[in-house]
Length: 288
Image (cartoon, rainbow, N blue to C red; front, top):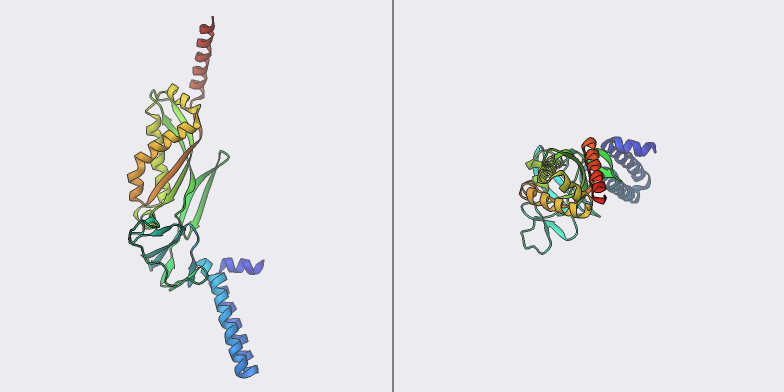
């Protein structure tokens, strides 16, 4: 447990210490056993270097990195962009770093020249895997969860993010509060990371604006009728948001693939109660 903790804290130092220790053991074995022992020591040393690289350094982007399914890695040369590598079944990166379907006919960007059991060598420290901080919201059974992580990858497969709008107002300025699940994917890792600061925050802001525009087109009664069928409301809002944000998101290498309304309610309880009371009174009068 202590060894794992040390690896997590300082993989470069830990891996180096292991290699030095095995090198000393190999030299001693060589001196003791002669030529045969020397070859055995070299073999043990080489195997140790490989396993340290594979198990300790590569997971941290030191001297190598792993490509995971549905993710892309951005490689930096100093402080400048150098390259992007991606692994995704049925997809590849074009020369413009767009994620495209196999058979699309677009020019294919060259992939890694060497791949050892999923591990790609890296000219570290001259080339490094780009890391960045991202925060986002998820809804777990309707409960809002805020997350923040330092990432060394860009997700190119769809992922569901949460968006909450508090100030969407109908015709007549009646506020509605909506919880939305947005399924989105990065379609160009370079654009998403370098063409805009924090693409996820920007996407959330644009979606909130589109929700406000959508709600503003209807009266309170029209919105209430839509809340009775969350599926049709989700489809209607999805189509509106996709159409409104399609060009903007494309410029920054992102696409919204789906949208689901998790919850929608009037944010003015007094107005809603008064409306319900008036509706009940109207029904009573009609029954007389």
